[in-house]
Length: 242
View 1 (cartoon, rainbow, N blue to C red):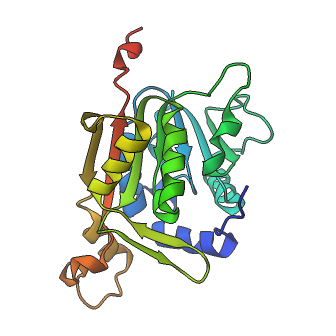
View 2: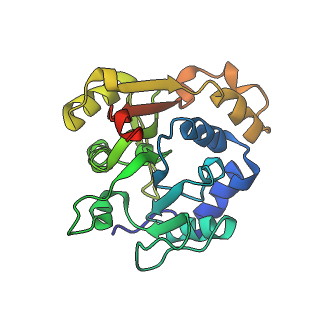
């Protein structure tokens, strides 16, 4: 497992910026609310679950497993919602978390039963922090474990990559480029892919950073990362009726 860049100090800043997930406010909560509307079935895998912004929007009868490579993120997740799963995958509650890198999803699999399947797999605000090839690998691993729907977000204002001194990657990738990656690497048809831009982005950022002297909408678009929500369907909905 790789060492996570999300240490205690960075996680505390993240909570301060995006808020307590139980309060359902801020741009990350809005993104997760939109993602939750795309959930099909009642077994959800949340890859890169962070502090749990998706959890308040999970139905009570849904079995949820959140994985993250940051122990500090999961400690916060646990403090907000539930005890952490340690050492096994036996269901102790319907809300569970596990310390695991997004590239290690094979560790979820049961050797005698093949790949562990989830009705919906989700990755919110994760892929922008991964190199493109690694992001493709994660999507492939998620897709192989998806029964109905795979949902993820990506920053899509052009095709740019920044790397901070800390090592944190901030990446944008155009919608057409992402769709091409999905078609070529997941062997899906373009008709299986849906996407929508988040119209709330400017409004929420102005609310989160009120110290700006002028509205963010006056800034050039290239200075604002645009979040886009993607959904890839397997087309297996007849299994819901079985």
